Amino acid sequence: MTALAVSAFLTFPVQVQDGRDRIETSAKIVREIPLEVFLDGRRMGTIACSGLHPEELALGFLRAEGLLEDRRELTRIETDAGGRVVRVHRRRETAAPAVAPEGQTIGSSGARGLGLAASPAPLHDIDLAVTPAQVLALMDVLLNGSAIHNLTHGTHCSALATPEGIAVLREDIGRHNTLDMLGGYMFLNDIPGRGRILLTTGRVSAEIVQKVWRLGVPILISHSAPTSRALELLAEAGITLIGFVRGGRMNLYTEGKRVIR
Image 1: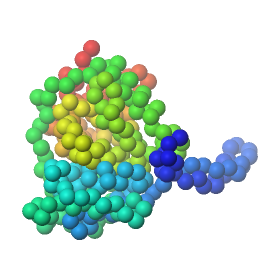
Image 2: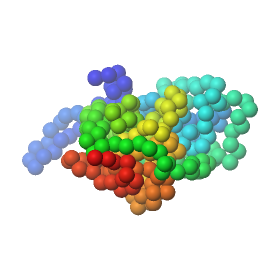
Image 3: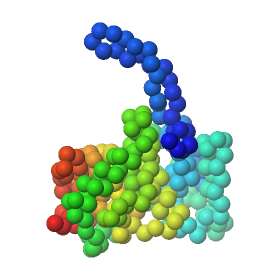
Image 4: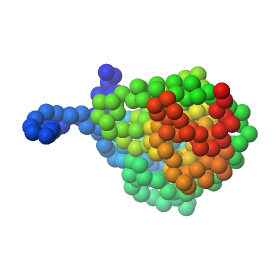
């Protein structure tokens, strides 16, 4: 077990009750902390999270809200208070958006809601394909690699991949957070979305689609199902959604042309 995984949970006493008996034991519980995100000295939000990869989460959140576009804008990133505060600083000529609200509190699975980023260009013309066998293999790796979930059953997991395999995997108490972590990772490492796939264990809502669209990723694979508004937005964005991937089967909801035999 890695030190990273150990830091993500605490052990608490619990009572296990079956039809007849009650047993005193203990359970591993995923950690939840508030992460304060500052941009140029201004608090942009407090995100409920597990505390893992706080810089990636902060940068991904700011990027998804249209507050960061280019890594060259950054001058420094500071993390303090035991990983509970991330301060992002940009170059002086980059002005902080005056219309952004300050001090919002964001639940781990709640929509972010600054609403500053316009929808990018549609992704219909991106030529990326995946086979059903590759989809099933990627989902198996995602589920088997969700180490914290397998210990606590209290996290979601998402991953950045190509058709050949998963490149990086992130877990957290909220599905929004996991995608923001991956967005921050892509931001820090200058990784474009065009040739990539995103996988997630969580339900695909409209806010999730917006995040994937802004990252420029043309294929989204989910262990769960979408909402109706998400399907409308996916069709507009030109993103392939392969959902409900389990038991050797999958549903092709939008842009099924990217799934080839």
